[in-house]
Figure (cartoon, rainbow, N blue to C red):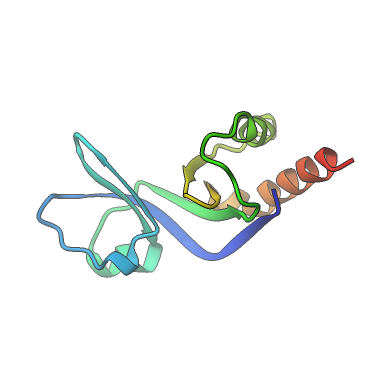
Length: 121
């Protein structure tokens, strides 16, 4: 998995259809009936006056992941859940990205590193 903790603090926000955002400021997004859910840096959301619903740390699993692969998300989300850590997963074309509560970032990294070590033995 090769987890890497990205620096910074990230937030989930919902933006209205008329809100203009610089595409370079968006980490991830998904359109929902209630609006566009976006992950931004905490500072970016503050500058735009957007209300954050979740403060997160961003962990990238740097191993190239196949969007059709079976079981990777279940394995790491289960390991995090067993440690009492919630996770929100966004799959990119090349990597999986895991958002965990910011205050639990270091514990989440340890859990993922332990899982990786056990898988390579």
